[in-house]
Length: 300
Image (cartoon, rainbow, N blue to C red):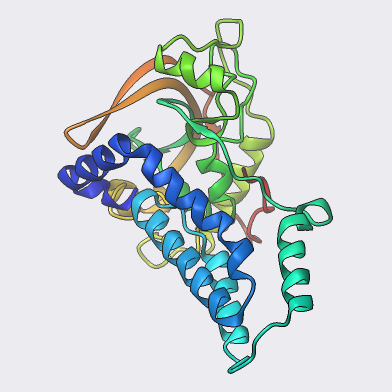
């Protein structure tokens, strides 16, 4: 998260949210439900939409999750509603607006964004290996339009020896899993792990590297942070990889870890339960311009 660069601030904010979870959840839930009332007039629509964009900005600052598409949509809504100066809705219009808000989920796709957070994580990440054998953890921002897929760990879901009750970013839809995580008693897939199968992931990484090499600057660097990521890896971190001449990368490997997390003095502490790495993914120099890799559209 962006504030992780300042451990004292991260710990301070974490403690506030940890100690007042019910209050903050109540504020957010009330704000969501309030749209039923605020749909009744143009002025109220603008006010509630500004509230939603404020929450989007706070979420980005605290977690690195950037709802930029939603922010743009809300700005367009405000601009459009702003043209209704002096207009008031009659009873019929209010009824249609409220009914559409309440029952729209029955007719249109609506993302159901509710889950339990846990202190556990099934973490899938990529390491790069340069020509001297040095290893670098690759930030998810590096993968551009597939960065959210890497951030959410959508790969290697059935790896033996690793958590299976935990979804992306340590979330779960099962209350029992949340309790088991707090007790550090989560179940894992049976088996000892061994070499992990990466299949399609290896092809994606190889293709993406070819794309990067054909778009680097004279120093072999690529500005992957200059992209509208949905979930950011902290641009102030991963300095060594950012400065690395990408032409020196000779291989990658995928890593999966199941671990319990805690925050102490603003620093994340990791209790790793299981760790496995794939065989090296050797890459080749491209001979022509490469298109950006296929997009993944998986979200929560």
